[in-house]
Image (cartoon, rainbow, N blue to C red; front, side, top):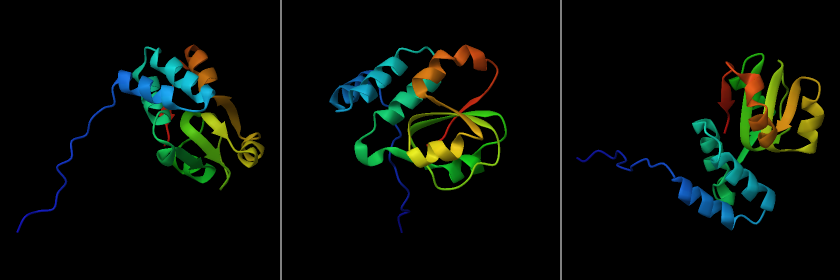
Length: 136
């Protein structure tokens, strides 16, 4: 009897392919941020660009409860998509995302520093020695 293991190869999306996907995006802000992230030297930002360049059906939506469960106090978190409002946050964080829902902004104002992904890239020097975690 044959085993049913998957023989799929994992492959990394090339920068050229990500740039092409960015040009297909109808949201000019999203296309510009993807191109901006690809110009950054750290591989972390290339991973975020790859996540943002995915097809619309595979976009990332993360609830506050997931962020709360996966993080600890004083961490820096990047969400390559939208932060939604389900759940509560128990500790102080810095959260950067492409978008935040209005309800999520209201809940997070007290416990977290909110910023866009581009703002975080520009302030990366302020976070030297701090791990930046991608939550997708």
